[in-house]
Image (cartoon, rainbow, N blue to C red; front, side, top):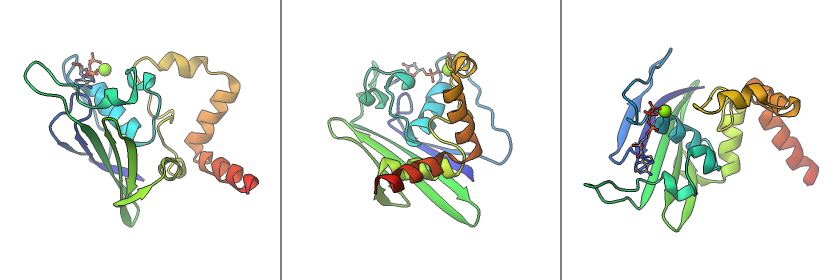
Length: 173
Ligand code: ATP
Ligand code: MG
């Protein structure tokens, strides 16, 4: 599974809708300090299900919504879309948050649970907590992880994290 396009609107410093086509191979994001490189990766992680405001460098979840600048008013919502190339088909995963109304997910235009998005990315061996996404201050945490945490990271990387979620579900039924 491959990310083909990222569309970001109202998320952190991406106030105006931005469309980013991601080609096959290695993608580098370059730019001066504060231009939004980390925000870009956070948009990706947030859409994959990240729910820790702290790990998105905010105090609360609504801090991901464009907060306004001296010249531009704040926004009421943030929306990020990830277009995936899943072999012979495309899937679109969207997460949207509105001030005072919380956040919601859609897959291919249909309302889904956070869990459904989690399973989609777990099966694709990636996700909000995937070791493939290491933010600036997380490198030390990966190195210092306890064995159980490191095992969870490896399982996510191996694409079997989704199986554990399904087994737990089955056991509860
Ligand atoms: P560095 O090279 O220093 O790591 P960077 O390119 O990773 O920089 P980011 O951390 O992605 O930069 O972007 C920081 C900018 O995003 C800051 O100017 C900050 O004010 C802005 N920003 C963060 N959250 C919001 C928000 N909710 N609304 C508006 N701007 C925001
Ligand atoms: Mg950065």
